[in-house]
Image 1 (cartoon, rainbow, N blue to C red):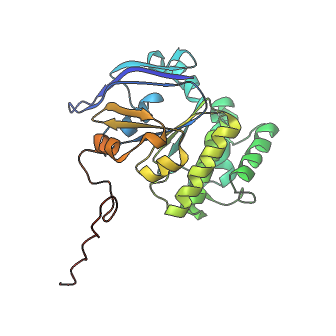
Image 2: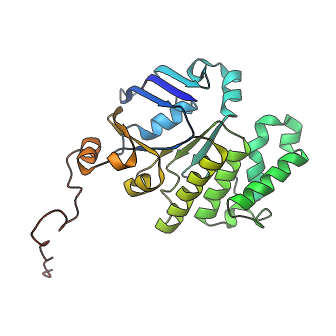
Amino acid sequence: MLRIEALEKTYPTGKRALAGVDVTIDRPQVVAIIGSSGAGKSTLIRCINRLVEPTAGRILLNGGDIVALDRKGLRAARRRIGMIFQEYNLVERLTVMQNVLSGRLGYVGLIASLRYRFPPEDIQSAFALLDRVGLDGYHNQRADALSGGQRQRVGIARALMQRPDLLLLDEPTASLDPKTARQIMRLVRELVSERQTPAIINIHDVALAKAYSDRIIGLRDGVVVFDDGPAELTDEVLSVIYGDEDWILPGEGDDEPAPALSSAS
């Protein structure tokens, strides 16, 4: 499905964000990308659909090299890659239905897209997706009237309207409260299973990554330092990914009780 080979990205400032990344995803699964800020997580996600241009390497989606595509070929490839953003990237003044149908803009003619005229089967699919993501009855609501969790569900439905071969999620839970974040991650996991579409998620929350992913990739300074299942993500591995840090809560793993906090001001 997806093979990344020797991927590198160096920004004009000289910052090397990716340093020879190799990743293969050959089946539908949820893959979480973790690492410190600046480790290259967002750069990796955005290189896959060339929102960021790689400096070197190959990105093969179903055998075709995305890096080598011209503008027309890239437009066609992006139809097969659903992108879900932290900031939702919805058109606030449009309705939920219009935002979801925008996932089909690459498949209809220019005039039809400008007038938001879509085939009946697309409209039926949009209603079905809204029902699936828990937004049945919200189709006429404006996007700016929704909560953060509802907006993210609209973003997921919009991405799925593309009928993608791959889902990319760039910190999809960073702006959400803990309960909503878990609901969104659970929904993504269920959709990956139902639609047999792999998902790559850039995520800061290690607990969410362990709870809802099938596989975790740890980046440090643009290099893959861990690639395994959640059960293998030990405190020692986390120290490799994030640097020296006490990953054990006070009082865990030792015989002495945690020291009491001083009440002095």
